[in-house]
Figure (cartoon, rainbow, N blue to C red):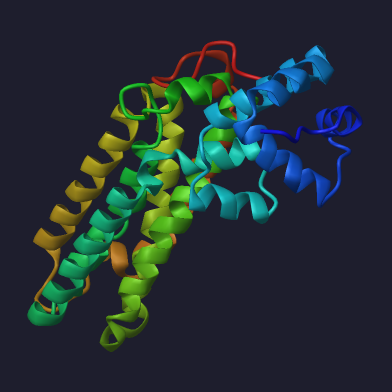
Length: 280
């Protein structure tokens, strides 16, 4: 090889100031010329070179954001919050597809058997289960990341609850559209869903993210069983009547007040998933 990159061009290349077409020629030449690469190493600033390699290593080691995370960031969500939301177990594809499959099967069963109570009984449990499965070291594989995140326990709880409720209620809403024959009755799951989720969260502060929501789920099934045993033929189950809806709304409000009063518990003691002393 008889041609080599000029000394001044090498210095400009090392400083990132060499412009095309000389830049292209230097790139192509340096690929096959060990002598010029050695000269380039001598011309480059060692401190800047080390910093460049450090930035490259950090970029290569950084996890690639998922599609959901990139969408959240574009919507204005902070980077660390978007990462926590994207890592929420019940927002992953496997959980969402499972919920969608369960709702589709339930809607088909309702349309075939003409029993809307089946859908109304199941729909409130899905958001409750989704919120319950979003917390705790035994349930959340991203628990360690949540602990060191610059977010208080109660705020993290609310962030993930809103995200899970949004996804769950959206799926339930789509399933409701598939039952137009039942009119407003097909929407009677909404207030019980909010009541169950709110009560489960309120009990989480005292009983943990597994026991609290589990007790609420058992209580809901018990209420439905008693209502079914006491109803007359073709009557609507009591939780889905006007009185039952008012009762669910009242429970949801009381649960929200109780959750607000116990919010400090999520930052001052481990609750099966939140660190003692809080974070941030």
